[in-house]
Amino acid sequence: MTGPFNYTKQPEKLFWAPQAGPQAEAATCPADEIFFGGTRGGGKSDTVVGRQIRGAMKYAHHWNGLVIRRKYKDFAELRRRFDELIVAGLPATRVGGENQVNYIRFKNGAIIVMQAIMRLELADSLQGHQYTEICIDEAPTIPFISQLIDVLKGCMRSPHGVPCHMFLTGNPGGTGASQIKAMYIPQDEG
Image 1: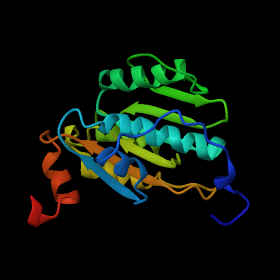
Image 2: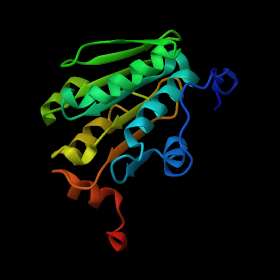
Image 3: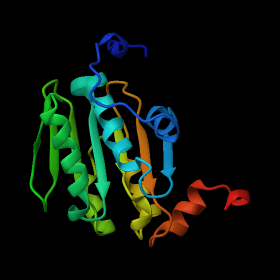
């Protein structure tokens, strides 16, 4: 990274580590846009947590992460996982309840927003926002996923030179599965 900010020299305490194999590959993949699919129990949602934490710890106050699911009730496990890591020493606090936007605020100034987007027009509230990493957990459950991705790509930017990524996860099936398949799975494999 060139410019006034040198992110490689900040010490990083390890609060999250991926499992060897596909989770480790997805957690460290440098591609701008990634879809991490598979069956239940493969650690996909935990990879969302890990990618966000690693970015927050590395880029400090220049990190502004966003995690999206379709419904607020679907965040229960992600909230529990963040809370578990906070109790274990992650230097952050979680603010927000079960049916509203949640914020993970780090002592170093980094922030992660967890927001439900039940209808495409709700994504309009993100216009003008900038995020360094946008994670869409369980993307195939969103019937308007391809349109949502188009809207969110306009929010992926950093005035501080932080590399920006979009990371999607999903199990087979769901109302948006055919869109995900068309976007991320080569025709000769699917």
